[in-house]
Length: 321
Length: 128
Image 1 (spheres, chains in turn cyan, blue):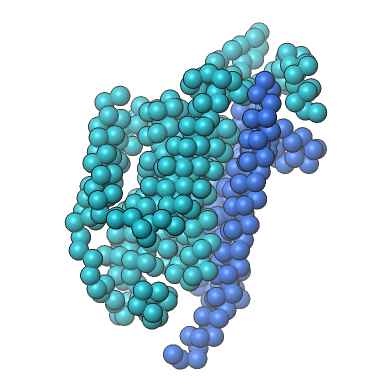
Image 2 (cartoon, one colour):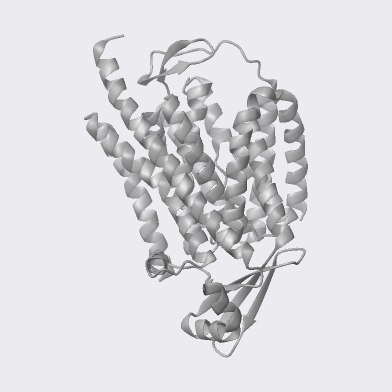
């Protein structure tokens, strides 16, 4: 019904709606080769026409899927790989790419946290405590990002990719062995370790320092649209002495809340493009579910090295753009 | 294992299961809305959908209530619903800690909830 109405009286409805709203966005599906934005104006109002080509739509879905799959395999979350794809391949504006990534982060975090909560690997108390820091950081980051230009954000993002690549290389060089468990800290937690078939009891150390670093992680999340788990997990593991499994699950539980802390700000600024955000979020969601399933069969170290080097390359290219 | 730990673990297990369930339902509902929006849009390639570039939350709810299920409204509804799932997660944590009578962490998670509420109020404020 609605579609018929739009087709028959297209121009009439457009004009009427332009009169009703000061700022409009017109979405259309077309068989073009890339996304395009047209700004048009009549006497008093202006609107933006956004064309969604079928090819870009499919590549967006596929790109989201790939970013989600490898994100889950590498423990990165979708954002780090999704934003360069959106900006460099599909030509999506930086702010919209960040808003899209935030949505994808919320989707993957919620789906993953549902699973981890049922397995009882999440330390909710610690998560909530650190959340005060990350949410504060993310709100400030979200506000700041909307006052920064796209080129400044792109430069900052290229710096972030460089750091992520370094952390990945450092992680790949670490030898996995018996984890030290501390019992002299606060906030006792426990989870069932499938591999060793026993309940692991642990405590948390150096919470104030972890909170300080969480503010920075939250700020990066709000500013650049990534989860920030790549920084939070090593901090929780090394500094606070939380077993890797619990640290990863708790970080995953947290990043959705952190992302929600800046999502509404991007939404209010009009950076949330429904076509791009929905398609990419669905792609990333499906990808991360696939990634989690196949992660046991993939040799992690080689993949980490390949992606760390690729991220270094992308970082340099994004900086030079 | 001492008794008090196992009792608190049982209560916590319930809270965790409920939080997990809420999250899973939230993700599926929002994904369904987004898929419905995209499918409707893709089925009518010549369709031009018109919507304000940044609808307010109230505007979106009104459009949904008035039965205006155009693709963009559906997609926005899916996205906004998804944005609310982490907040539901925090609300269930507040309730869960309340059931456990852990008032310190009821306070901690309420602060998180308050910060998120401030963000939403700020985002409504900047839209004018």
